[in-house]
Image (cartoon, rainbow, N blue to C red; front, side, top):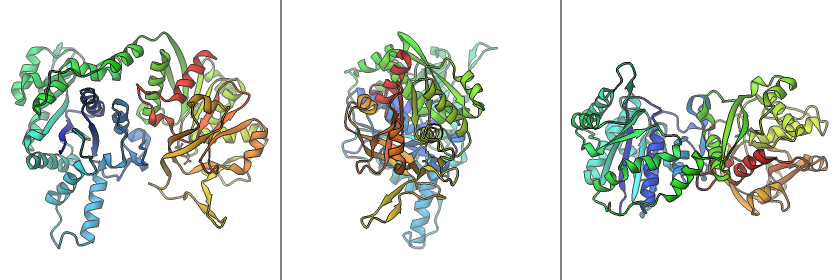
Length: 541
Ligand code: GLN
């Protein structure tokens, strides 16, 4: 059976939380027992966000199968049981690349290639491409805002798609803003009306209007929106601001969103979804028994979305520990010397240095690591955070003053260097290349084996883990003996033992750093054990 398709569009302005809305609807449908998949269509021309600046686009979310994707896929995974895949993120760049490749190959038999039908057909093929037969609902989020030039082919494609598969098999949900004008003390429906008109002019009639608002949406505003937008009043749904994003599914349920979706498709609405796990998570998130304060010393701290999954992982760890985790995002460039570093970091109960690329801020991050190491403050390093912990230790404990990563400098002591591997004849082969951008890193889920009797093993409670990677450089294992003799142990490696994956410091109360990104696998109901343990250590040590 082919799945029911829900297209989610956004109007009026960006940043209304379309990804969270789509994901929350996914959560509700899963709670009703349905099998759901979510997919994102991005109108930008980049092939994927792998080469885009986190300052502009937020974090690059890495899927288990190694896709460098949009951060909304992170919301999909956090709100549902999904493991997203590379194919769940489709961009204009990918669509055009495919169409141009087909044209060069002669597949179009000499036809003139046009947006309609060639680009739109390619988009339509991607809607259900690689979707398993047993999926009940496929939720497709269309990025951007209605009215953007880049979005037009996608809107045209979804209009056509609804006709192709029958209007009864498709639902259009439009997320919009109903602003509250303080001076007039009034909610304004006009921007939403205009945005729906724009959609209608392209042949799309939304079935559900999801209205972001700061204040409750009164009946007359709903009726007005219903009348002007040609939507049933019960399908004008309030989406007001909530205290925790994990309350969104519960709030939508109260507003009847999933009921209206099921009604639209003629499905049973009598049995209520089981939302007990969500209720429990929100209860724990909003009534913490204590607080803990941690610092993240990073580079992209100006835009919180740049570390979205880390921020969420802290929320999950807070839920698990029944603690409010206060995260302070510090710009590593402000840690200009050891005294300033100590002044800034004093009072934080834990320090995390996240992943990153490029040299800017690395000195400050190393100062933060040294501070945590020398002052017994719980430390958690992720990817570049681990590499810098290795360099810091080599410089200050092993006395290798020139120790560095070859990402930043050719040095006599490249304790971090390009990933290497050896072929069957014992010849060294590169695992990664320098200079290429886009898709040349070690990406996605790889197995890692943990050493018994280590902090890593205690944290994970198992010998084998699979974690998601996104890096070109690695700790050079030729220095392993020297590090271990001085107290820095490698307690996780690739199964062949070649790649150091986790390090820890023996005589420190909690110092753990990993080459991969645990934050991509944390969910509110399945918090990542490393974040849970770090928050616990920060609170109790
Ligand atoms: N820049 C480093 C590398 O490529 C670290 C990457 C990261 O932190 N994601 O290995």
